[in-house]
Image (cartoon, rainbow, N blue to C red; front, side):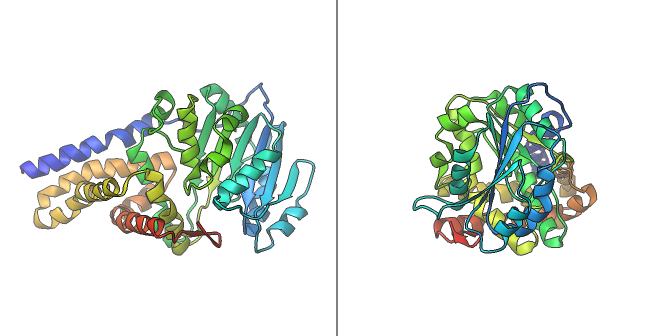
Length: 360
């Protein structure tokens, strides 16, 4: 019975961060602003013909009046450039990316080129697969001004349509919302308490240039969190917020791309040394997975599922995920994280990370 109580106490403690996030995390909701700062929406696009056709027209129909859209065709091997040319208009500028330079990773290189073309006071780095509602840009600018920060990263609501996606994608929000208190990111000076998602980063041009832009993270696989850490190291404030309706994204389309996408970022995103990373995986197993196995021998351990499901429900609500489906898949999500974390470590250390047809 003592061991049951110990597990219950430990798991109850781990509930603090997800419940705190549920109660305090800022949400991007419809807002208005009278200060219409000029925004450059900067979109790197490599092999994105489908997403350009589907989502770029919506980005070009923002209610906010003062913005430009610049899309860089990053040496695509499909019809991305042709689809871009079909949408060419006054708001949209299309540029052809230069060949990848030595020492750079593809996305930072593309974002670096985009920043050189931007005229805005604010830069909005946006992935090509992100869907914006018409009021999204003004709402983000208004929240950025309200928060009085130099960078605002918004986590979109993740759209999942296949079972492969449902098995993998919820793990991202489950882990991030359990480990890091979002509201403390803005109120602490430590660069270690930082997170961002490259799908949506709104940043002040002055702060961006002061940290050295994407050149300062040119060889980082997780350049988004790298920029967030640099912003704080330079004394600026950042804010990480959530969106359910205004900003959405379907990150991956099946099980394979979901595994490939998550594996390329887990290890590097933790910024841990290998021994610490491995110890973290062992602790993770003992805290979150061992109780499920102990229930088989001792049914009284079922009580420890209460704090575990408090974590799952809190994170699912904040992320805008289906409560029933994510609850049913919860044990699988916890189990699958371990091979994903180990695979991420392996491909990072052996330089086998491949994305968009490039070895990173």
